[in-house]
View (cartoon, one colour):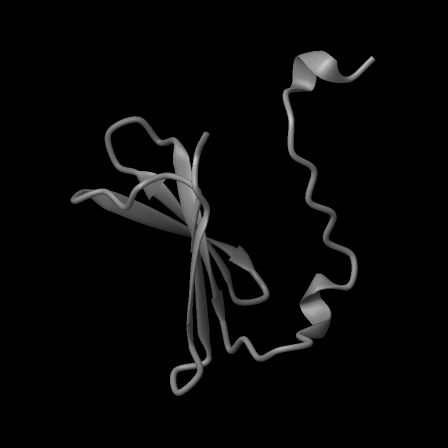
Length: 75
């Protein structure tokens, strides 16, 4: 089972989340509103994300829904 690693740096207001191990060669894409997608440079596979200007109770996450599981299980 994959481990999700979350790093919070309050002095930088930075929240980093990895659901895959960080890569030596990774690229980022800004999705907007201070959300950065981290991808494997070779495969383009998303491996994590960063949230800029993050603080606890950040209202950008009022509408975020996290669902775990495989798409094949959805009927």
